[in-house]
Image 1 (spheres, rainbow, N blue to C red):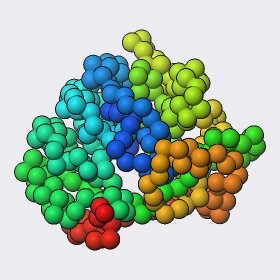
Image 2 (spheres, rainbow, N blue to C red; image 1 turned 180 degrees about the vertical axis):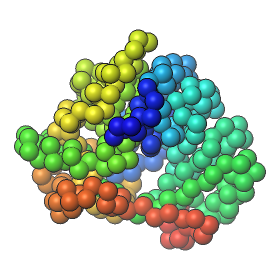
Image 3 (cartoon, one colour; image 1 turned 120 degrees about the vertical axis):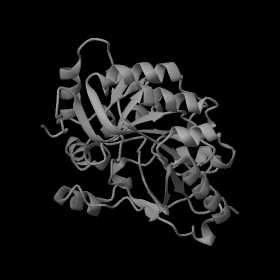
Image 4 (cartoon, rainbow, N blue to C red; image 1 turned 135 degrees about the vertical axis):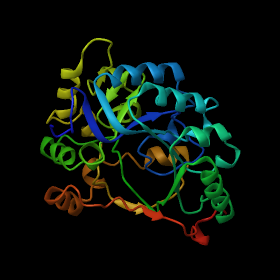
Length: 307
């Protein structure tokens, strides 16, 4: 068994592989790591999702497929996306990540098709506790796990100007929990990326992610060795030049306009970096510093609910 947990001929990821059902969102979270506030509407094709994941499943298996966005409940064919992921056999467990704002109108088929729904809750945009109680009942009725996580803080995620400091780029990559601890592998439109930022950051720069070299084309042939080399590479993706990884400065969550969202990313990497955290993660990359608060069976703070 190697560092990716391979127990047979397939590469095993003990975490999850991400699939973006949509790229856009109905929220405008500052420094959203998936660029959703500035993304145009886009909807994944269920057949494409099945083809990519089923091809990948011949050489790769993960603990769960995480379906997210953007806000995935904006997809009018979301049940088909979920079923495509399930039928691919790349994972046994399907997790839907949502901000919860559209769950009330979601079809029963969505609730019964997934194993878990994870709601990310933000100050001033939170669902009410009455809504949360109804979602907990609905989850029990469908045999679905429901997780709620409060996100009072975000971290700077990108710098539009980036940095030319190769040593700093390497340090950011080596301390990146997204790539090395949480292993947020991403499958998008025929390509496998080691992290979602390997795709999204090129979109931020108006470049074609497929031309960046950060993604590996998912093929019909036996590309397991190529996939293993891609995942295990000691060299960070090209996107690391503009990415803050896990060490961006922390700030209180806020909703901002599309224009303001873009303006805030114009500072160089050095100005957006939390150098103390960078040093701490160099000592222990497993340090939990993501700032999310789990809500098991209790309420959401009243001050967080939608105004």
